[in-house]
Image: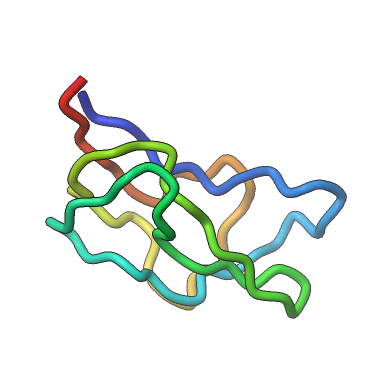
Length: 80
C-alpha cells in the first residue's frame, strides 16, 4: 500500500516551514519512529519521524523548499 508522508500540523507555530534535510533517500527502507527529515520551524529544527515501516519510494519536497502543514512530502510503500 502506498502511504503519504505528510508535513505535520505543529501547535501554534507559524504555518510556514522549510524542509532542511532528508535523512533518507529514495529506495531506503524505513521503520516506524525513524527520523525521515528535518524541518526549520521559527528558527528551530524539528526531526520528523516516519509513522510507517516500508520503502521510501518518492520524495516530493526538495531540501530548502518551503512547506505547509498537511502537505505531502513523499511516499512510502508498506507491506500492508
